[in-house]
Image (cartoon, rainbow, N blue to C red; front, side, top):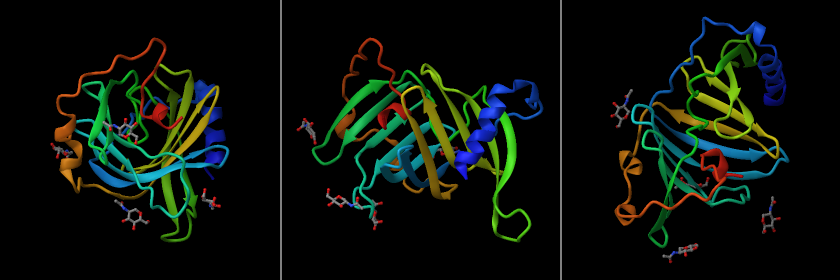
Length: 214
Ligand SMILES: *[C@@H]1O[C@H](CO)[C@@H](O)[C@H](O)[C@H]1NC(C)=O
Ligand SMILES: *[C@@H]1O[C@H](CO)[C@@H](O)[C@H](O)[C@H]1NC(C)=O
Ligand SMILES: *[C@@H]1O[C@H](CO)[C@@H](O)[C@H](O)[C@H]1NC(C)=O
Ligand SMILES: *[C@@H]1O[C@H](CO)[C@@H](O)[C@H](O)[C@H]1NC(C)=O
């Protein structure tokens, strides 16, 4: 379904004359949920839980290696989009790296400047309780040559985000979303990371949520 919708949004991206100027991107609420990241080759990169503070623009994502499917990536990320920094955490050996963010793009909230594409129903629009109505938004990625399409519910909960660059494409999908923060501590810098110095970003490197999965 998302491939078909992405095609629709590609048409939207290239036919800007159809842009609807009356729509403004909605803003996601505080959330807890699960996220899967899949490459377009069908490889499930990772699966885990996220906590998102939409007011403070903070995001924690922890992959769960005991998920039944094999995943290739173990990650524990804590991102502060307003401050432009993030931590790669290794809770097992109590270590972390602190880096600066060159792009605040992430799949849980529609970025500013996104264009409304269309509204569609996944499943059935006519059978009661069997459809999920989503709004689709598209735009260009920041500091990376690429585009995104995002699918959110009418209440602005993220369903899926498709990122496509010249070299790779990824689908981020979210499930079991709740509009509360269940563990606020997950959005605090762990004590063992507190005095971590900021690492220098090598020339030409763009740190972003997306790039952590590439
Ligand atoms: C989201 O959570 C943060 C931290 O708990 C809180 O400060 C903020 O008011 C919450 N925002 C909303 C819209 O509930
Ligand atoms: C990890 O996944 C397993 C299997 O789905 C689940 O039982 C467990 O609660 C998860 N752990 C965390 C920390 O989410
Ligand atoms: C998961 O990984 C194990 C060990 O690498 C491998 O033997 C198994 O076939 C994999 N399972 C799937 C479903 O890919
Ligand atoms: C922690 O573990 C990672 C790999 O699991 C390793 O690269 C890193 O050097 C370790 N850090 C410390 C302080 O032991």
